[in-house]
Image: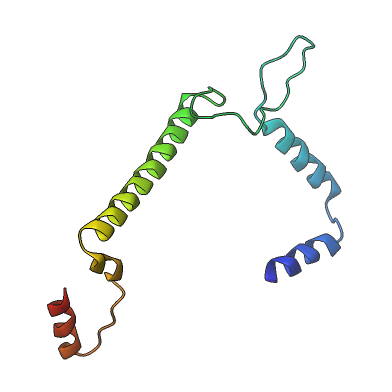
Length: 115
């Protein structure tokens, strides 16, 4: 709800710096990554389906960054699947790990004795 109100507020406001807005939009347009020139001499934008892990678009650093992101996501999914297998096949009490409440020292001892 707050985001909708904020967007409506931005739409209703009058433009107070038309020159600055135009300069900002031109700078934004110039910063977009474009493909090499084609036979007509045009430089089109890269499509959204471009695989940034294998296609050199913005240099080797950007490709390395996206490869790292993929490895990080893969590692997190792998760890989650291993944890789920352990909880399913070894001890179902692992599903409850970290969900038990404790308050008094006695309850804490009972929780530690439980597992």
